[in-house]
Image (cartoon, rainbow, N blue to C red):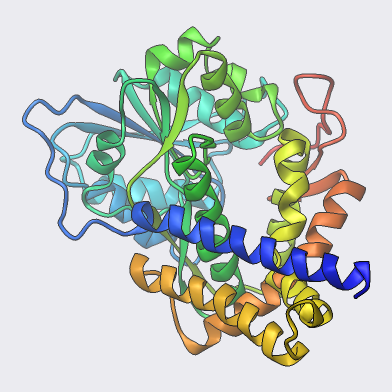
Length: 385
């Protein structure tokens, strides 16, 4: 038996074992709570800061959800860089419909960092009146108990609570592929890492206690990395604290997507992971099920199995496990999901490779680069929207 066959067989088995372990670790925390969480009687006031930039397919729904949260005391602070941004009109309209809710719209294009999203957030952070502050993206569909679920995950030793996005409401097959990336791949690995005590902050929803971030140097310190969630992870770890994920993530409705949209986002995120956590990014090459299936076909002889049977067994464990996770967690699961996962895994080696070869990317029209992060030099200074 050749060494190549043994290596291929070993790769297939080890990669599949890691896949199964990640599913087993993630599943308990991925399940959405069956009951709506009630706010405690002594619930502290919370500031919810939301940066706005442009309008998406579900912007009306996600914005409206922020005004109908079932929490006794919270304020909303919306931030835009330009008054003429169409998101400004949406926010003003929602505030007029809900005069009972404490809400403000802040406009300004200060640029203390090379991260346009962080620049938009900083003014909201400084205007926040509460000691507990949530920074949340505008495309998160918040359930009524959003705030109490974020708060319930805070523990001693925790420095930030986050929640990864879960793709929902896809209206094209490209959006199905994005669900396959967001749900049973990215969220799964984030929850698995969290279960092992290696949690990472996620920029979609971030709950801070003001004193933690201020002790770390203030909100501007989140500009020390090209991605604010990477900076948040490192800041709380330096303080001897850890990031923690919520029990059950929150939906991000996708609507219609094109393959160019999906590839652009995934390529950008891959480059950001490589730039900010290269040692954790390097092993991502083994997370493609397609590579494990191919390795199984070449290594089947090591177990006296036919290539078809061994490859089929690996595929069943790999994607059957993901389907089971989606079912348990209540995530998107249709016949198209399996095909979307296969196509996702076909792209993973290319995403991994291009992340090591290409530094530049675009975020909402802003030219940026991982080659020279803002903490260590100047990033591209294109006009920010």
